[in-house]
Image (cartoon, rainbow, N blue to C red):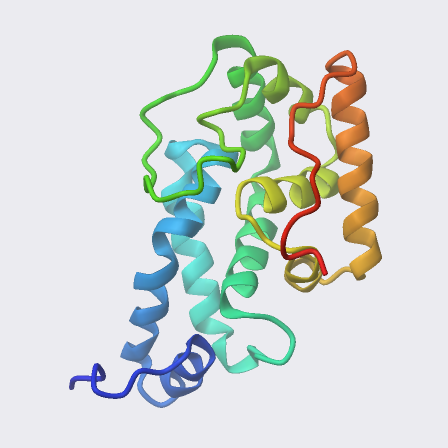
Length: 197
């Protein structure tokens, strides 16, 4: 069956997939690379495949509960991925500590169209990676959803199911701790994110 003649939005694809489960493959095709890159940057390539597979399996199983009035499909998927990363916290901390000691693994697969100014694991200095390992999980989640995924504060609040103001507080706290740990340097651009408002 061809769906190309009837372009639909992500939320509608989710809704249509309730009756025609194969339609969910469009969500997978659209977001797999982006979600994989985010997870690989946080946990390393070795653990990314499993976590990303679990992310999309969870999304597929919970698609009937997806509410487009609460979150975009993209933010919803990042929320699922971030929650699953939380279950693999020790791998993330090990990855950050290893980056701090040995530098960056340039073999992490990714898509070149990623905006060059966004912070990624490929551009993290070893000192920044080591400092990030020292952040608490909740602050690190918010910081990396801004830096790696480019989510707005509103999208992060929805993805993590936290109040909007909490996003700003956690981001501010993470930046302050990183600055203090790195001797007052500013490792992450602190200009206001375009999607903040």
